[in-house]
Amino acid sequence: QHMKERGTGVIVNNSSVIGWRAQVGQAHYAAAKAVVNALTRTAGVEGARFGVRVNAVSPSIAMHPFLAKVTSDELLQELSAKEAFGRPAEPWEVANVIVFLASDYSTYMTGEVVSVSSQHPYEQP
Image 1 (cartoon, one colour):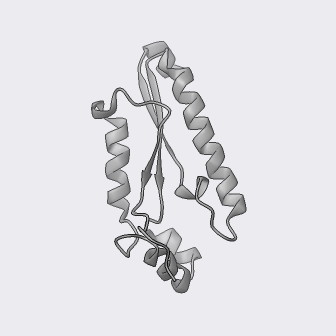
Image 2 (image 1 turned 30 degrees about the vertical axis):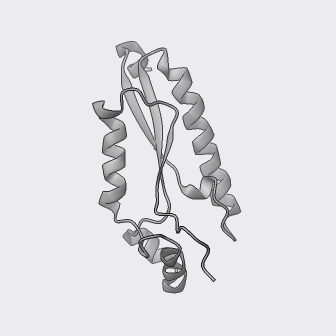
């Protein structure tokens, strides 16, 4: 409401590539992130007439203490191996995209879900 009254504003939602990329055992998480993606797209077009931009950042795997705490080393290694760089993203690499989306460098973007991933170019055996 405050952004609408000011005629400007930026919202950057946090999503995940799991919102559109299937992963065994992640149905609940995938459903939640798919909702974030749909909300972002809808709110983006609805907010545009008020000068409010709504986008989302959608990382594949980004290593941070909470993830390490709740995920086995084996699964982290498996997921990292699926990335083109063979490693998870660092939090600052995702943060750079968030900063871009929040900045005046992305003033023509709204309703977009920006993937921050290095999807492996081929399937692992």
